[in-house]
Image (cartoon, rainbow, N blue to C red; front, side, top):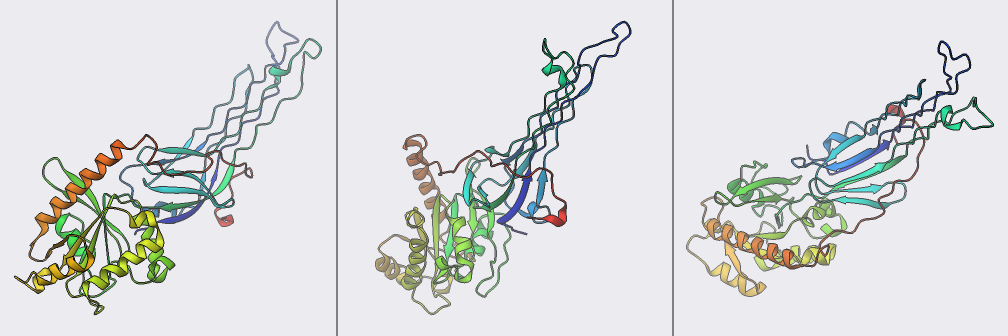
Length: 365
């Protein structure tokens, strides 16, 4: 199941209490203080792990709590530190502070990580407080509580190529033809209800990730047909492949169908609308040997158009080459950009303090 939103509660470990103990050894009738320090609590860390592409692991588990530090012991022995809790999320996950509504971190690349709750410091044992005027301190510091916060996770799929178009434009069929992905395919609109990813092998040393996104309709940027939820996944793609039916099921002419989607992309995000785009006329097998529709469509929209048939394979080699050329061009432009120019903006990394103790499952935030 594809899940792209989740809300969780994270709690770092509490610091262990310092110990109040005194030396009790043969021959040392009045031993001094020997209480050790408490151990630090573990942090909660979110890490982008390659291979994950859904937040489904958070559907049934909403509380993630690190281990607290151990209490200090006698003979100046410190308590054990609590291990950090590392929570793996898919690359492309946005981490928000739910209560403050701020973006904590955009884990846009595999291996990126962020500390979302810091463990409490362990308290000092009574051995730390011995002075010339107070040689037998009978007190120690308690451990500090670990930080806690409510988080909202939002996933934007990361793919090289995003397939966009009206419902029934042939996106799933094309993905299945070019990759090993097997999205649901049927001869009616809205077959695809959630995004699908496929790896396209283009020779022995070339491969790229292609995303099949649910069909968009007019008003998608306002949430019609859940379009706003699907459009955010397109933001992570490097290029767009815009599929238009030879004979759109809506009765629109191909140029009208094309402009409908372009208008939705622009209304949702000018940055999204500015992405490199390859325009494809699908289901060319419905008019074999007749290139007039493609030529008229190309003249109407003013951009090059590639006609394909996923059923027969016609035009797929040309489309694949066009995708690889466009990806190479985007990669060259990205390499030439100043360092950090393409980094997504992020909010403060420091987590806010929260309540101590990990709540029971029935007390979900």
